[in-house]
Image (cartoon, rainbow, N blue to C red; front, side, top):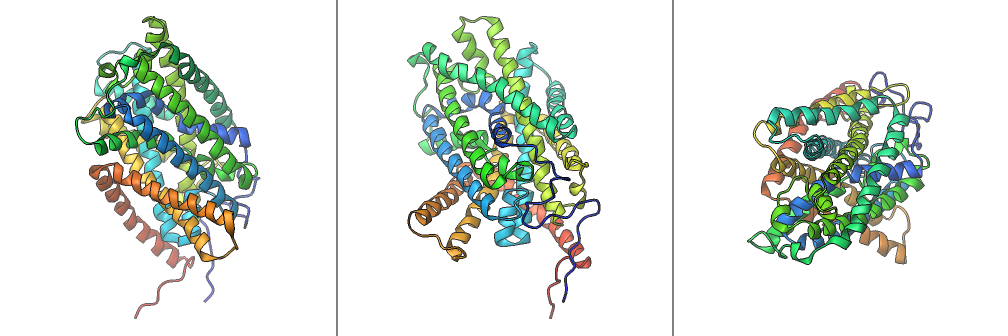
Length: 471
């Protein structure tokens, strides 16, 4: 039987082996510097500005956890580079890897989970961003509606930048990365001259087991590294993706990891532990400690955090639309997500994803406020992203074990070590996230399966896939 493949109306067919749509339709606006900036900008959002307040709740043991997560993120960056090199149609990154090795259903589940991650992650970023907007403008004891209004503004400004086009998005990304990286580096270096050893809390501040402390630190630490895959996700927009995706992932993650470790320890030494624990805007207190309580210093760091959040949301708004676009183009997501402008901007995905994040913020603020909202959204994002990471690592293991290409000696040992460590890392992160987060992530994953059932029926009816033979 001959199967005729069709694509959703209004889309451009992919060029075989070229990684998706041709350059005329899908602008490759990101060179190595811009792709690296996309990774850095997506990793370093406002999460780093709230992270020390959460890490303090675990104690100084959280620094060791952050270091382990940094190594795991670097391995994932190498893994994504390897996968992009060998998979012909790599549009959508993690989605493409899973589909290539395990078929349509695994590809769909990966795309679905990652879309949830991106929607929840954008909400988490903006919930942290709200703290610094309020600090910058002196808003005290805001209502939940005030928090929501500020959050909505933070979500829709980057959406407008992305809707303006890929080149505008890349320009804004490069600018915001510079504006936030330099001040953070200043705190990470100069702040050490003002550190006081008495400010550091106990090794385990939870009052319970060390495992509990590791769980608290692991969730926010991994969330702060979500974005290592952004160059792979946006591979269709990266020039020479087989070379530049891996390099951008590793360079961007390494620079972010070094900054995270330096700045987190510095803040812990600048702010007394009781004041730091649960603090939603710890950098304000840290910088004021460096400048003898000067009010302008707190305003300056709040401004940096606001710019940082806009930069992170700018990159993540692009990424949130890219995975469903790639899946929809293959008939494995709602077809409306394949709608694009002439330059390839996935406008429908941007609008719907931003709307979903806005609704999630409304739900979160309806029952909670402050750092509780941030922590809830962080945990949800971490578990749902661990699933696509796991699929990607297993895809590489399948390739290495299949013998499709001869890999011997040191190269085989190296690649197996990277893939195996990535599998274990994904499993550990899932376990460390806690029962409630895993339960919610499983529920959301199962929610996507009925949608796949209708998509599959539609593809069979249109002759895109062969129908199973019934008895």
